[in-house]
Length: 316
Image (cartoon, rainbow, N blue to C red):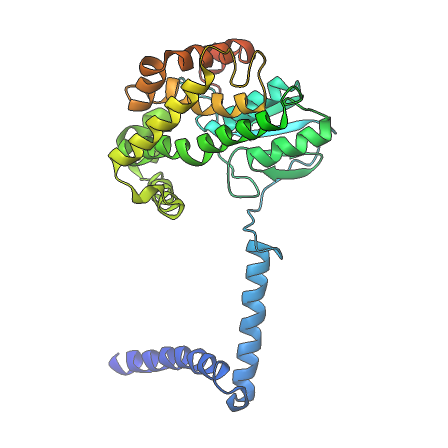
């Protein structure tokens, strides 16, 4: 038995040393490669290149393979998002943003509830005329062009700049406060919020998501701050929106614009999906004009809110 193990270990070492030696020669002197090593290096390069092209594409962007429907209605948007829960029609603010936009723009769409990721490895995403598209902001830009929609037509260039600044503050800054609150500080309650089955909790299937959120926050930079520092940043963001909104019915004036879809998505999460949190307190107590704003958007564009939040089954 020991001889067998010794031979097996020797063979394993030889398999390891061959590519290692070839790699070293590849970065030192190519002329020293034997024919066998040269073939091994060539095959390795082709294999790695194929994997990289498949996963990242020729433009260096990460791709996620998605399954598209075989039949579709031309011009119809198939909107992929997490299923509604009792707290809110969509637990991602970007889903609330995108679906609110579709309603504001009167664009026909069909919701497809589930947890499948889109081509950019994110959710929500859409199918349109047999193609998959990801990122709520880019989807909205595409649909504006495709459908001739302009929710910002009443705004000056200066107003559009302000509108974009508030949108990006909410999505690239404030959002992470909610992500930390749900996935880091209150992970023990996330299963109830998501309304997933008990087996998901027992098997710890959401722990990788928590790790990914933590890593993304660190890479973003905001994850390097303490909990108190992040909450202070979010408080300043929310109060800035409240101050700018003032007594106006919508962010930029008397009628809603594109930014309202984005900000409603962020603020609705704080109002309905973070009960007892500092974010809920900020929106409902410290800044009551924001709570009135959220209810105004909700009543205008989500008449089916109560129906949706009465638990909609996931489509297979």
